Image 1: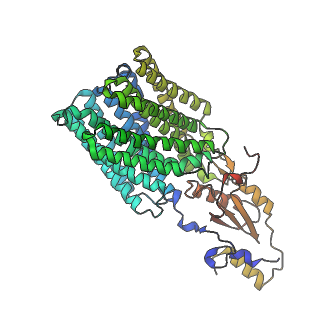
Image 2: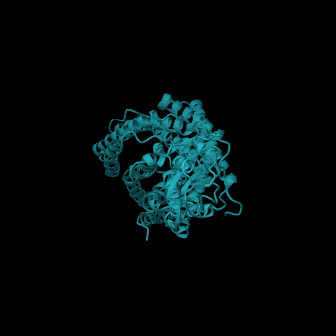
Image 3: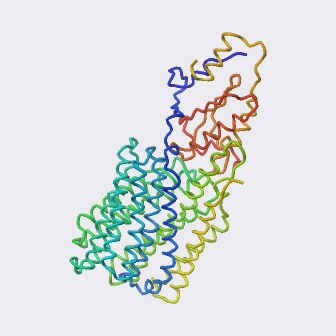
Length: 445
Length: 116
């Protein structure tokens, strides 16, 4: 038997490799091997789904208020925080604990700190929302301090993780910026909470509220979305090779707009407000453009339910962009327009973007931990086989149509449409939570 | 002892030719076994996806050179283990070596035509 000894010299570490191949030694793999246990992202996703369902029910409660443009009502703000902090931020925290080791190839700095942060975050948020609904300022402040401290721990953990990362790509920069703006959002939120008691912001409190919302959305959430989408969308859609400059532009514009907001805060003049709007709006346009490029360059012919929800989210973000100039011109003189703008941005855009990724992340985690060990030994299901796509599409239809109905009802000031739309959305939210529960219970036969 | 089954197999053959021919590993069966390893997110097997670059056999040792869709792919550990387990199930295979490479970089054009 003739042996071609050159065949044995493939490994370039031996110096004899005839091809310039970069070999990853099996023993030093990072990525999924260093991902935390299922418990860490799992506890976050479970809590986020509970907040999501509560948020859906809360929408039914406050839907008439929304259609009347009564966004400053404490119960409306409480429901808004069930979505922003409960659904969106809790999901982001859990997803980053799973995503960072894989995407940036560094393990989380401290899993124990992450559990501790979660343990303070959830009760803090519950206290805060309960305080808002019950008009108990002390409870609100205690909750804000508790979940604010939890977010500080999260940022410290994230910063420690990012610091150890050598490959500082777009995702790294986006997440670094996001962690800074998360801190800023917490500080601004605590200031607003304290203002309820002492009213030191006076007439500028609505401007301060606008700054808080836009630093949270533009600086924290959107930077995370841009950074994560930069890695995940090409992977999910198989759209490798799409131009990536819009993503880089989005990071620069969103960061610049958020910095300007923080620098001027409640002293923003009209010129500064328009400059911020152009920067943040430009960042959003750049991100939507980047995502559209990924979708258009995709090789996978069919969109799964998760990616359909993401596509719907992009549509809602575009709607928010269309409403933004009118909101800027009219300001608080048109409260229903302001409410519809925030609905399109938060409920339509970001909440649907997050919901879409649940159809990717949760089945993947279940597959990875339960079916992955069987790979190569027997036939295993695909990730998409872990749920019924018809049910998922029905849920997506409920979520999208409910959100559309709410936006239309708010824009038109048509109260009778608001509550039925919110019920439709809540049914979709409950359906999604139930479907995730079904997925989590899947085990090999 | 180098610890490398390929080098050890080569050394044995060079120094003392076997009296009986060793059981041959059927490379076709190795490829068939690899076709059972799927990328569960994409839903296609790694051969159809064009992720397996090379299969080499020496005696009863098999080396599989493969890639993933992207560096940092969360399926890295699962697919690597799947390759090892699938190839190990082929009759005659006693050693499996997996070599993960990033050059040439995988792109969707490597997917076999008609895969969808």
